[in-house]
Length: 326
Image 1 (cartoon, rainbow, N blue to C red):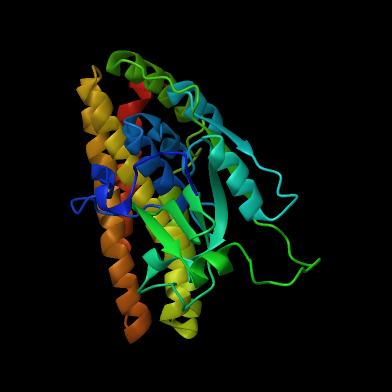
Image 2 (image 1 turned 135 degrees about the horizontal axis):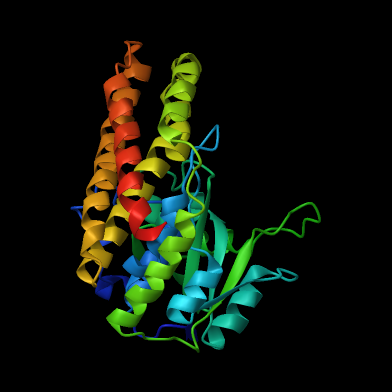
């Protein structure tokens, strides 16, 4: 028997939000933010309203902030409740119980067993990612799940391995982190009410913006790390770039999209800072390619102008925002 929290949802009928469309500079942001964009869009809610948290992203030293929508804000904006799930028995049993009750489960997973990552990690590399389980059929060994920019299904060996059905009991195995998502109290706000609440959250996150411009710090660390990146090769570079360049580019693309949406909802003055953050998103797309070429060829990176441009755009964007939300 199929247990579906969202009856009727199948990969063939799934429609991506424009944040995941071909026009996006970064069609995939990070696994956690992406599943919320897709899930809220499927519920008929506007994910653009939740993105003010990206205003606070910072360069953390060895990576940029792995940005995630705060659970409290998902509840206040949409009435979606997210709580940690205690994994005290096999995950598949938790999935059966909660999906049967109309709840979904977000859980860390091994991308090695996720067929939507074909061409990258599927059956090639064991990497941690997060999925949102929406449908489970234990008899047919099939799972429907949100991941990255889409909604997908897996079955057979992938299903058994994901849930460790064939694995012998192992007291040393640590269950992966999981959350239960309740949607029985959804709130469908008017566009005006939703944008007003989003503006309040934007003002709050502005207070948590970096105290200093993060891009000069990022540029200095990149110069320091570049010899090691060349020494370790492209595989290591791609890991570094995911944690740094991609997170920065995707975060500022989402921030710009949030401000553009707010501008259409009665806050037109937010259009100008949005342009600054869009420029940062595009510049990081250029940087990730230049970096790969420099690591592969051993030639100079020659990204000083690009990085300085990002620092200037960040400074200008924040200066434009300050009198509006400070």
